[in-house]
Length: 148
Image (cartoon, rainbow, N blue to C red; front, side, top):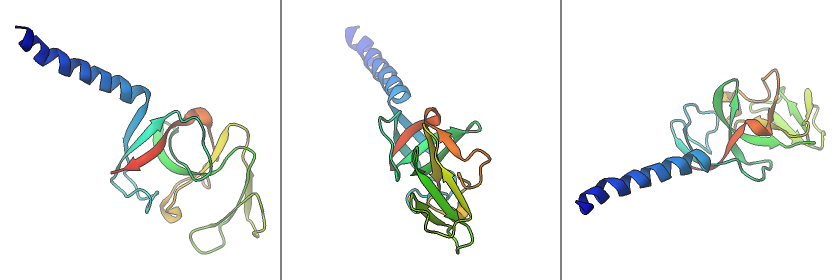
């Protein structure tokens, strides 16, 4: 009887532990678009760490924008200036802090906000096109670890 009970109890507790672990510490998601290619291929599954301690330019993150989960790269962090010249051939020319471009648009990132860009800029709907171009820190769900 004890062996039979353990046959069900151990997998149950392992499943509960894994559920809680992934709800609190890890993020698993699916990337349906090509906006992050070549770093993350269309149709990939991704694994990330929830609520990362620090974020820097170049980090790939998962965040919520208008009720939708998105995956983008952090292009600029709080207090950085980003200049975008859309008149250059695709992808748009980007400059951080040093606005030496003949920029068509510049953005200064406010405190606790981030400017996001997709790696495949010709296929990405990102901060360049949003009415509110910045993502708040509390909108960021996870930091990308790897895709498969």
